[in-house]
Length: 345
Image (cartoon, rainbow, N blue to C red; front, side, top):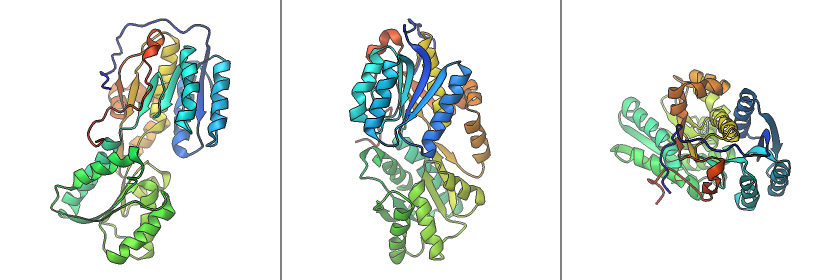
């Protein structure tokens, strides 16, 4: 389903009746990314005079269902969810939607306003950054390792995009295009040790931050880490950021700025409760973090309100689609939605 761009000047509608001015976050776990979402929501609730509540499910689907049911019984005006198990949570979120509340979802539906992470674009940003480095710093020649997650269908477009970014550089050879057995540092390190047996000289490693950090461990163990290598990952993991700041092989990490979109969802929740129109969906745009821009990026994460107030900065992080409000809540998104087409076939 294609949605038009969000029209902030669309007619307002009725404020939902009988609901508390409370913004609640049904949080799946305490990983750093979700802490960033919570931080943004907290800041927005404070700025818009909403009470804020959070319930952490600790990766338990049944616990999250109970928490969302409790939010509904309390007639809370706004719920943001990061589902542990989307299918089991969906009917309970639908009941909250029909109560008139704002429901924001971090990727899986249903939601009155759904957040999307554009996977092909995320991989393209990393692939293009690596391709530029190969052309400008490595003379157009590189042995490349792709540590993929192609078994996870929704992430596969990331790696399609990386391959597309590299395919037109004649001097690039992809010496390994493979998924580690486990998506963590240990899995990345184990796979890289195996790759080095056949290819002791590697110039570029791309994948998720956690597995690329593992690959860096293996390169260092083997004495094969070099300052001119390009290691790049996705997720903006703190260890990856630290490596980039330190200088050396790790050159870039692609981040989806969770405090910024958390703040935006909190603003949309407050607008909904005041009868204003809000986006049906929102892309969080990937940022390529390098030594040149990390300081500015970290300042934005610390003060998402400043990003929100600056239209140009906000547009560099977020792209919004469609319009919905209390009176049109039957148009809520109830299917996996993406703004992308390329890389999905």
